Image (cartoon, rainbow, N blue to C red; front, side, top):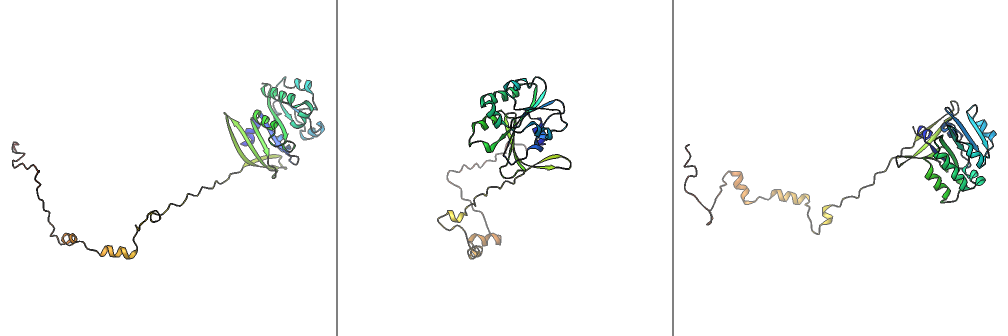
Length: 252
């Protein structure tokens, strides 16, 4: 499901390192069935990418300049940039970012995929933060595990993040992603203090005290059990006694 969402995302940023193989992911995300795919080759030669996209509807551009870039996007197409790092070195970051924004705003560019090498950036790079801002989907490879990726999808103003494991079957040339589900540990609730620890005096009884309580016989208990108990009522001085029958006027 995540790969499908990435494939339909209009702008995909792939962040990798020098030792990561992103070819299976590129082949999975690239849209070249319904329209042309323009491959901008700044880092690796066009001959390398021709071996990757065999018999595909792909047009290769090796080290395209600004005039060449302006010609791309006149008809329905997708664009892949093999290295934003090298593109910014060739054109300058201002022109590089300008053409990225033009590709994104163009209605003829169905999808834009660009690759950023994280190991070539300084910490807290402004370049990376600006690319994160314009990308609708971000795929970042883990620094240690080459099969683990971190995915961020922007949808309706919200960012959905997930950690996934990529598996590639070379026999069938298929790529699959499995979401890593982490079990959240419930925060242990602090133990409630015992009432005895909060009081300055003893409020609990031990077994001996309970037996003594049950053995204790109060004076009124013997009368209750023998059936000799009576109720005595002594009228108060302010009681209002009415000797007349309150129902005398009723014809009963």
